[in-house]
Image 1 (cartoon, one colour):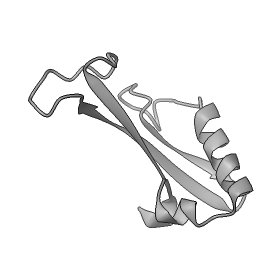
Image 2: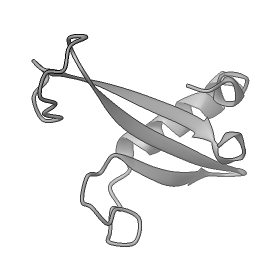
Image 3: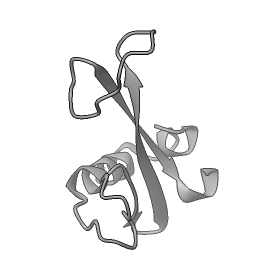
Image 4: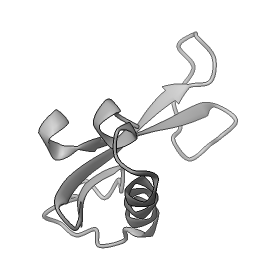
Amino acid sequence: MSAGIAALPVDLRDAIIRAVRQFSNFNTDNDPHGEHDCAVVVVPGYRIIWKIDYYPNDDGCADLDPTDPATTRRVITIMLAEEY
């Protein structure tokens, strides 16, 4: 969660997190590679960007398989569009 999101009132942060969790409107325009790892959602008055990044669970150069939680750690960033 970015500093901009963290500074918002709790009820608004909750609405933003809910909107990110419920987002399913992926299409060829906003998800051309079919990865479902980022999007923009609008919560009244705010454009919110969210992005999931994938990192190996170990610090080595293990093969990264985003579908395998045993080898991959997922980190989501949620920010105000103006913070991008």
